[in-house]
Length: 195
Image 1 (cartoon, one colour):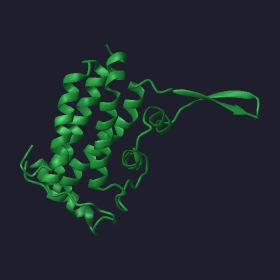
Image 2 (cartoon, rainbow, N blue to C red):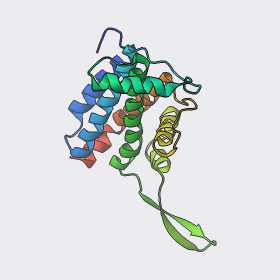
Image 3 (spheres, rainbow, N blue to C red):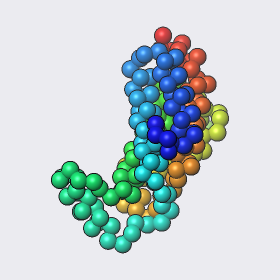
Image 4 (cartoon, rainbow, N blue to C red):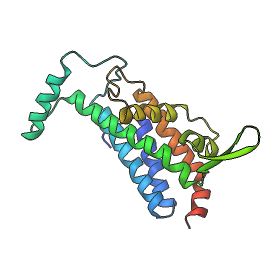
């Protein structure tokens, strides 16, 4: 990482390095850790490019900037640095959101639950991602959940987050910390499950 990389990112890199060495080399684990490496890289590049949180909407005539960047990319020329910083940030939080879904499954969270209907009958339903996370992670994961919700807006809402972001760089760093903390705490379970 560059000298401009923040101390938390340096600590995350050291922790991720150790997890990669300590956890079994199984597809589910390795692929998830690979995603987390990509998230770490994205956060690092976003910081290097001086990513700025954006709680408000896009600038007026934003599409003109996008059109210029499309041509710059096609010609192999440098592109708008704020856009590139946002690209790396978005890549990072999407990878962290993926881990929010994957890690509880790796830890054996229940995929189905039964609910009472009319006080008697039971009906099976699929558990939600947030229910699975709560089952395996009683620790604080507020920012990780916020980030997961933000990425779902990217994926499912036609306007995405053009009105402004709900997740800041500080939230993303906290979510990464919460991810690493869960993996460290769950390492014995992962080793037993994926021996």
